[in-house]
Every structure is written in C-alpha cells, then in structure tokens.
Amino acid sequence: MSGPAVLTRQLRRRFGETEAVAGIDLEVAPGEVFGFLGPNGAGKTTTVRMLCTLLPVSGGTALVAGHDVATEPSAVRHKIGVALQEAGLDPLQTGRELLELQAGLYRVPAPRDRAAELLSLVGLSEAADRRVKGYSGGMKRRLDLATALVHAPEVLFLDEPTTGLDVTSRITVWDEVRRINAEGTTIFLTTQYLEEADQLCDRLAIIDGGRLVAEGTPDGLKSALGADVVTIGLGRGGTKEALRQAVSTVAGVDHVVDTEGGVAAYVTNGAAAVPLVVRALDEAGVEVGTVSISRPSLDDVFLASTGRSLEEGAA
Amino acid sequence: MNEVVLLSRRAVREIWKLPAATLPTLFIPLFFLAVNIGQVSKTFNSDNAPFLFGQDYVAFAVPVSLVFAVSTATSGLALVTDIDLGYFDKLLVAPIRRTSIVLGRLAADFVRGLATASLVLALGLAFGMRIASGVGGAVLIVLLSALWGVAYAGIGQAIALKTRNVQTTNASFIVFFPLLFLTPNFVPFELLAEPMQTLARLNPVSYVIEGLRSLVLEGFVLADIAACLGVIVASGTVLTLLSLRVLANYDRD
Image: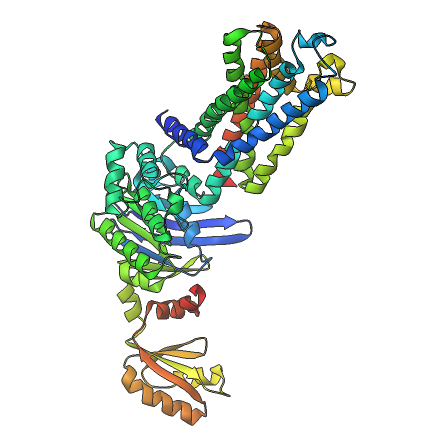
C-alpha cells in the first residue's frame, strides 16, 4: 500500500441538526495500530462507520487503503475487515459455517481450508461445529475477529473490540490484535478503555464532541503534560476556585485542571512540588483532603484536553 | 451469482435450524381448512354446488389454504433479525452486490413454499380431494404456490428494510387480511354479494386462488393459469424491486 492506510480531511457527519463528526483530519500510516479514543457518543463509531462505507459522509473526504469511501466504496470493501461494536454474528450458524460463508462472499480460494485455518488461529477449532448462540462473549468476539480476517484485509477496523468482555477475554483479544498487526495489517481501533489504548496503540487520537482534541503517540501525549501529576483533593469547607488559585501560584506548576473532587497540577518534579503546594494551600487557608503524585496517564491527557475524565465517563 | 447461491444456502439452512419460524405459518391455513370444511361442507356439496365440479368442498378450500400457507413475513423477519443482531452490517460491508442479500432470502422463500405447499396439498388429498389436472397439475400447483410465496415475501422484506424494527415487520401480517380475505375464498365470484364481489375482482390475489383452484377442480384451464402466473410475476417484480429500492437507499436513512 502506498500512501496512508486512512486519510481524512475535514470529515463530517450530520444527523439532522446534530453534528456527530465535526470536521476531523486523520492520517494513519500502513502497519500502524491507531487508537481512536473517546467517551460514549464522542463520534468514534460514526467515524468508523463512514470509513467502512456503512454511512455516507456529510462533508469532507476519507480515503481508506487509497480509495475514496464516497466514490469507490466497492474498492474500499475489498481492502478492509470490520469487527463492529456488537459482534455481528448469525447465532443459528456454526462458527465453521459462518467463516466458510464469509470466505465465499470474499471469493477467497478454498474457503473451507481458510475457515479451518482461522478457527485454529483464534482457538475455536473445538467449538467450530457448535452454533454461535452457545458461544461465550469472548468466543463470539474472537469469531467476529476471524470473520473480519478471511480475506487478509489491508486495514482492519475494530470498534470497541473488548467492550463487555472480562479481563481474560480482553487480554486474549489484545494478543490477537498484536498478532494480526505483526503480520502487517493496519489496525484502526476505537476504544473507551485507556489501558487498551496504552497497551496496543502506536499512535492515537482523542475525539470529544465530534472533534479531535489530541493526537500523537501515547508516550508523547503523556510527556507533553509535564513530568508528574500532583492530584489534590479538596478538604471540608474549601472551594475549588480557591484551591486552583493557590496551586497555580506554586513555582514549577505547568498548568492546573479541575478534577471531580479537586484539581490536578502538572509539574516538572512532583516530589519537590508537594511541600510547596501544601504550604501555598496552608497560607491561602484552603483545607486539603488528599495529595498524591503520579506519572501522567492517558486519562490525564484526556482531562487536560477536555476538562473531563474519560474513566469517569466510561465507568 | 455465486454470492446469491451462498446466501440462499444460508437462508435455506435456517428453515430446518429454526423450524419455529416456519411451523406457526402452517397453523392459520390448516386451521381455516379444517374450519371451512367443517362449517361449509354440508351447505355446499357435489349435488347442490356446480362450482365444486363433483368434488367435496375440501377441493374448493385447499387452494385458499395453499395461498395462506405461503403468504408469510418469514423472510422479512429473518432480515430484520439480521439487522438487529448486526449481521446485516457484516453483509453490507462485504464486497457483494446488495441485491444478493434480498435474492438470497427469496430463494429460501421458494424452498419453504415448495415444502409447505406440498404438505397442504398432501393434506387435501388425505381429506379426499382429487386433482383434476393430474400429477402434472399437482406439480404446477406446488410451483405456483411457492412462486406466490416469493412474490408476497417482498412486502415483509420492504417493511423490514425500511423500518428495521422487528415488531413492525411482524405486524405486517395485517396486510394479509385484506389481500387474502377480499377474495372468492369461501364461494366463487358470482355468489359474492356487492361490493364484496367488485372488491374481490379487483384484488389480484383472487386470480392466484382461482388459478390454483382451476387446476384442482377443472384441469388445465389456460386462461386461469395465465392470469394466476401473470399476477405472480407482476406482483413479484413490483415487490422485489420495491425491496431492492429500499435497500439501495438503506445507508441514507
């Protein structure tokens, strides 16, 4: 594949008066695992559905594997694999029947052999001849992944592939995603799980309210916030405004954002900043509930970009 | 063509994997057959009713049951279930012609129609009905019934694709009542009172029933068979094109 695996310019989608995707520019390189992170309703699924040719674009352009989703949908469909948020499986078919049908629809040579190969790859050989309705959530998700891979797609879209799965199943899916990517498939992954984005993605973009609010590598986005995060919980009787004001005056504090129960201060050296922060609050007469130091997380990136915590939204 | 065959195979497999979707559709036709014979067979018999052509009333009633048996919303319900489960999206994103999704379902309707029509016909024979057109006529009756089932399926498919709602698609059986009851289902056209007679003559389904009935009671009456086939082809074409049109606009809704 020459050129980006996914390229969008001012991509938009309206539903009546609501602009679900409000002009986003994305560029995903071939071979990348690209994370698309955001809370429920941020525009992740709408973007993926446009890129998969399931939803017409309202404005802008989108190229997938070099083909325009609006004018060359058929060419795009040959190049992509899709596993949407809810595993789209037919419960009456067996895993083997489903994969053989899928391989046939994509005109894969020897569909039976390909189905057997994929069943073995995702660890479902033993359950291959059971109806899908008897599969567990994790098994369904792995089968869904397998159906998206029958034709060895150049770009694989995974829309919240681990939502609703237990930890063990989630880790199995992660391993599968890494394996698929190692074979050269570009992966466009939406998620609302920060750990998932951290674990899997080479690069990610954060979307909120239909707009991109941050983009970069997970480490790059975190380090851009500063070396440490000092989180201060408000004690009884204090106001967040007074807390924010007092913390902002401390030397070494890069910037301060509100959290649910207080503020988070982004500092160059957490250990050195804590005594100064406590003294400043004491002098300002602001009662402190808790103080903690941590390295910036992707949630801090989200918080700094949007003023809200993604983990609270996803919980 | 390959994709139509693949999707047909899947849809046909569903018939025996989910018998609960087909068996209830036999209840209404068999119930009406039993009720009609029980209530009317003494009123109309071969001695006093020339329209029975010397047979018992069962021979007059079986063609109606055949049409009832194959006029179902089963494939519409199967489509809307695929939509509900997300499998439909998987088909839409596959590099296949979208028409194959609808045509694959219709192939299963044809197979289901062959099976249910054969069963109803066999039941009629067990009740003493004779087929005036012989074995060839019996085969034609089953074929025409199954083809009518395919034509009628377009209603359920169009509703399923437009509404994407299981309840609404299920409720499409309401269409069944005016179409199948404003017909000469109990007595011939001539014995229907006005305005029922005019309504029945305007209803194309009447000619499907009359065509099947002529094969049972009279033999090969070409005019009746041609009218029956004409209605099936015309309504099948219109309703299938309607489904395909709704599917073509599916993304825009």
